[in-house]
Length: 225
Image: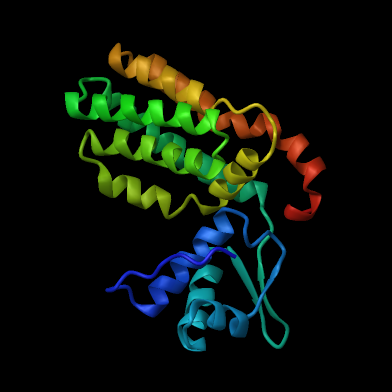
């Protein structure tokens, strides 16, 4: 498990949630694995109370299952939940793209261009975790450019199941279209072509479907049967 640095103002419960979320999404805590309150408390240098509260919160988001007298486990990836996450995200992304294509401020156009260049570098250096974070930031910039930051925060809180599948795809050796998809979406934005941008975003967020059978075959223990 990767232990993230705790900020000076971060409360124990929030810190425990952040570390657990990071490790669940990035598969450092694999689907189906057991988690121990005592071991987590020791690893995070926290008492058991904030760790227990963090596990209860993650149980609410269906990332952790808690069995009384038995223990807690990271949930397996449920494709039905992944599909619901994708449905919500695509609806929001396309609504925002319609606004963005009416005109994007130069500062955000430059930021997106720089982000894509950093993605190319991360891809060339095979830094998958870095590419994952740059992917997230690319989409955040699109929302920020039309003052929809709160909307982005809302969907990110609902994307954990989709993000685990993304992380699994990133860690696999299948061909990754992330950078090329972002280049195409950015091109459509600069052309003010809302229809093209929305079509490209739909293709981008549906790519996981093409890998479904391969991922299920390669990692059957990670998925709900």
